Length: 357
Image 1 (cartoon, one colour):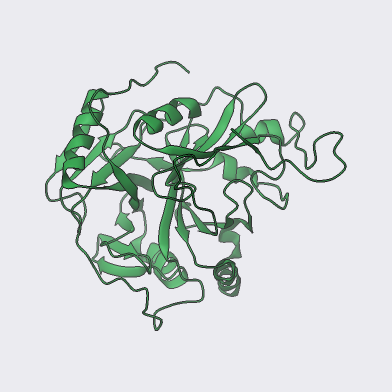
Image 2 (tube, rainbow, N blue to C red):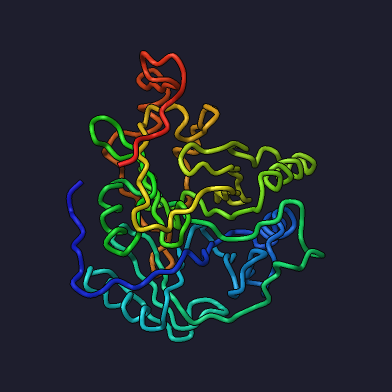
């Protein structure tokens, strides 16, 4: 696609990690049942308009805001930066990119101070902040620990039509690539990018966008994820399990995808790997490798490729979608015109793990 994104001359903000998502839901009571009663996220604050939630090990005010609104959508992908000055740098950086920005010294949400929100070059609402209210870290509150405890916010996943364009923009912003999916013609289908020392803080998935594919929370162990499945079965809401449990090829993480009452996709995730060294290699997967998305070779349900949540502009209105013109990952791997392999032709055993560049 055209319309390359410039590299600003001013320094990029020093991003520490993905920190919280601001999510609009249409029924706050039903959402509370899902995120608090089912998943066990901890309430920092709530009123009739919003619920502020955090994971067990978090010390900042929240990892997730559920805000009542007319249209279910993601209102902000929020990142913590290293210093107060990095909020200034973020504002200048995106201004040079020609992006719309909005600065609020008292923050956009409860518990967060000086912040800037931007409509980034891909159309996503990003937020950058440093000042935050500290709350009790519940790490040793074993009296509150559930069998399916969510302990950290792990990552976002964004749907965008031109993955290489987005990759270049995020690399300029200081993100590093851990893994990607390509084909022999050079088409990129997805890329995983990080600031903290894990596989990703966000990923770009090729498709019509901008949309929010999912937000992911980490557990300590695989059995925590199995317990969530058992609990959903016992509550007779197993139809909200979209995909999994299983193990990804990309990231090596154990995963589960579930849908909240508005259809927002939540991933429960554990056991990826360390990426902190400066020469950490990028792993590239062939799009036709049947084990890239699920290490055990289980098929990906079509909705996982096609469905995602709207995102909002700074006025609170849904962003229009841009249609992907490159090949679709679903189309090239499943159906009459697609194919996938477990072993490459001529191999008697083994499978393609992905090449390290």
